[in-house]
Length: 372
Image 1 (cartoon, rainbow, N blue to C red):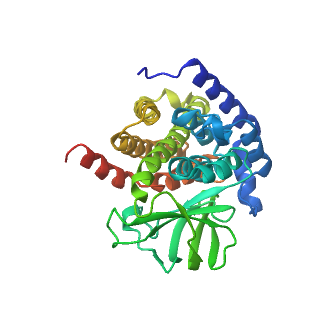
Image 2: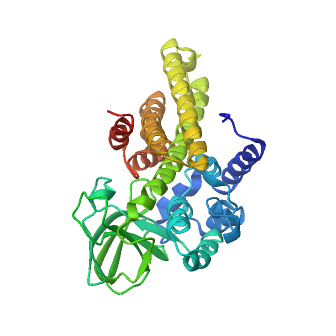
Image 3: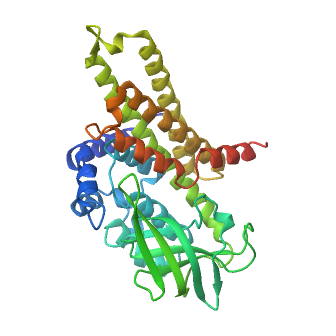
């Protein structure tokens, strides 16, 4: 398996980067933050992304998707990371679409997948219940056909038309078996959605379920983790690709800056100390690129991808942390001011680092998959 993009994937990369550079520059996330937009992302941009086929990358062609798979989704996510695009891409097009395609009935696929691909329906996953990512620790139970409990850190929850909820139909928190997935419509009686604008100016929600009807089951009852875990891993790799985009873009911004910024009459980029740090930074980005691309390719090939997913997510999280920290420091004290865009990158990176498992979660999981 060649560790390079093929011609079709390279064309997608050039198309995505050109599209986001023109339609979604960094100034867009700044304006969304300042305006406190009710939706939280550019509606026209989202429709344009759907027209480009980005919303259907993980959806098979028979359901009006493009079937480009994880590599295609990762290419687009990396381009999104470079300009910090705010859109329900991970929640609906990656996680929601993949879960329905993997676990849904023929009727559910026919009803929801084309609508996701065309941007007509937004789907999200209500998964975690605490500040730490722990799917198997789900405590929310289905009692008498009703959902009761709390879900936190739900991406794009306030705009989602369909919410896929992980709840326990049997067993106790910590048990892998006994978990089921249910689809709930927005506006269902008993569902309370509180929007939370996080530090990265993107949308997250807290959802309270008070006797919400759990009528629509997605997949087999009690066997949710068999479907959810591989889908989560695919989403984790795509998130890692977005973190890679952040690391790459902050590197480029900073290299341009140190070539122009002068001290003692010379560009600060000529100082050996900064050159060593920049070289390490570049090396870490390239190693991360290899880890992410390999994980994306393996995900498309099928099989057990846990080892590759945790490697990619852990490595990308650490590299994005290094990149954003170095970017701020090499810009001096000015790097943290609102005059510069770097503050947006470091905030987005910190949120994505924790999304579906932080470095510690995936380092531990990687070690377990390696036999430790």
